Length: 288
Length: 251
Image 1 (cartoon, rainbow over the protein chains, first blue to last red):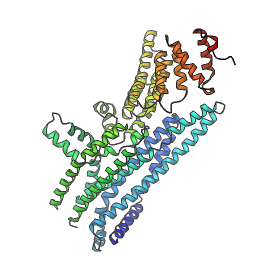
Image 2: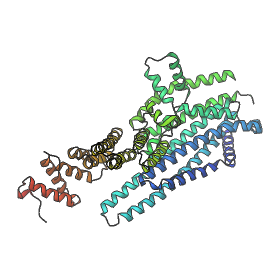
Image 3: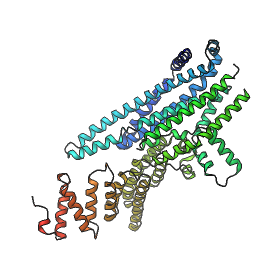
Image 4: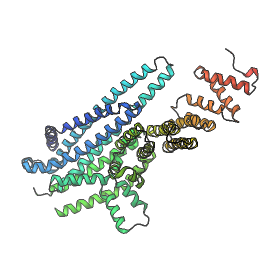
């Protein structure tokens, strides 16, 4: 119980520290991007406007949360060592495991808040635009039949909010949590924050190819031994980040089956648990 | 520490090996649900360049498609039809499940580019202008047909194919089939069935079938009894010499 309290205290402090580092300034850029973007696409049809607003907003959400997860996690360990705060914390009866877990909890809190704020902003802009288009449609079809008006309004509503956006956004959060845990694992043995960031970014790109490597490996066929070894390394060591890309297809109107959503979230949770356990194992033996 | 690192790498690989069947099953389920259908291959790499390809691989397919769509819009404003067709191909490859992109690409080709080709003052030969126009019609139809292959579970592109076959190809039999197919989907607008009936009536050899179809729609109630449908039924009654007792009432 005491260990849990300690972990929670570290988590809260990490979250407060990150907020004080003014990381939420990126929200201003996000707001500019979606509000500016929606003004820019005003000359398109309403379907195109909504499609582009979703494309840009959800893409930006994915980029910002991924970057935030990597940057925030990569820096805390080198910073704590440099500031010597780590010695003060670990001198108390706080296990290294709790320290790391607390830090990760703090980062998860930050990521959750960031995604809630971005999703709120995005949905607000989408709602305002939808209101505008609905009012315009009502005015244009004022003299027409009720059936035509109902059909037109239904079409507008169908192009804007789609309940599948919510699981799509939730999976962005799961993916960012995975990236944070993976970066924590890297920083547990890395000598500098820069190395951790570079490695995490490289893994981010390779992780999106893991599924291709896995399919290539499982398909067998007549390939060179070194090619087989290389694809096996990619398939076994790297996470399958492509599995967490729901939003691209959700925007296009594809529905997310509950089973698929839950299994993908579970996969993310499993990755987080494994990366965290490995990070704790390495950190336990690290000389500080 | 080195021993721990080796152990961590070995554990990570073991976890990777253990999770492969789950990942494979999940990927198959995602594909079955309509996710991850984009063909990211060398052809796409050539079309979108290295940076674009990297973005597509890194999970930014939809923003990339949006940017290319804006570029296509700019090409439209400067009437660069060929460039537009190329960009539309790339956008639809990146987002094959987006109905909007297939629909708009087809519309631009069959309606806008084809008209521009027919009015091309640089081309004195009418035969060549007509040929170019037909090529754009076919390009538009090709977008819709490819869109349908990628989205066989949605009605919108069948409906648009019906409109294109009716208005641009004047192939009423094929248009009727497309409208009927659209009407089969739950949530399809009620006019799909009426449109199918109107086109069937123009399809040589199917007049009787069309009459029965439209009559059945008429009997469904007031909502289907639009002036076009009623007038068409009256014309067909005369043409098909329907007995007076079976004809629509005059009032």
